[in-house]
Image (cartoon, rainbow, N blue to C red; front, side):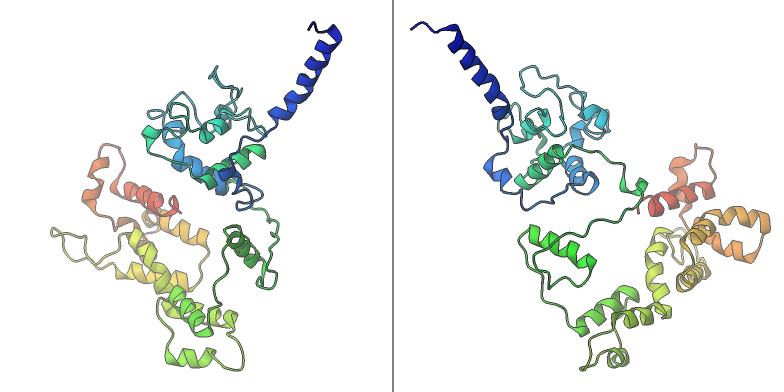
Length: 347
């Protein structure tokens, strides 16, 4: 049957009208879409997306140029938003913000084709359905990249809405409960006063509460006054000892250099100095300055105080610095660099 020109125009018009409808159809399979109500409503790059990319994608598409595949980096937006070089794909970009169908990344993480899927089978890395749902939501919401959280000014977050309003007693509880509800979990039974008292004591002084302290804070006629308990343990001399433990480990504190080739060294005054400053609640920047500038101040002032503080830089084993002997740096300078790297840079 011969079709009239008007009929052809009608059919063509219908196809044109339906093309956006089919293009807007979600590419999410049912097993991934099932997590839409179990992941955060607003996906944050630093807290939700970057950990997944770092564990599953950066091995081949990260900052390491020696390991990078396909000349693609997913750790920087300039690379992630560039056009796709796959001419056989329907996606025009690696990531097309707001458009899953137009994002090569979305199509590849959902594919079951061994020659096309990402991560590749050879990498021995696998994205589970929840991780896929997070990445897809991130793309849907604009695929916003952010600086590391330490370079971003803090902002007050929006208090999330929760189902069990009676359980949440403060704003922090809302965040905890929202996470629990997203994973279909219920809060645990509220701890008794005895348990809370023991947890606070172990956290702040590293010791369980004594019988006298239990009698002082535990009463049948009123709940545990946590502010009073915390203030009490913060004022104890053991608080400084407990808090100084981690710092002394990083500074390599010991009464000897270690191993069999050294003699006794009396460095306990430095330990007491660190404990004292924790108990005095010395401002962080003041403690930071004293720890790093001790050797310089010692050369200028030659006082016992700076001689004592400089011990923290000189505690490290001399032989550990041999690998850097050709850098032109002194042992003290190298010790200071490693101290900063291992303590501050790792926090």
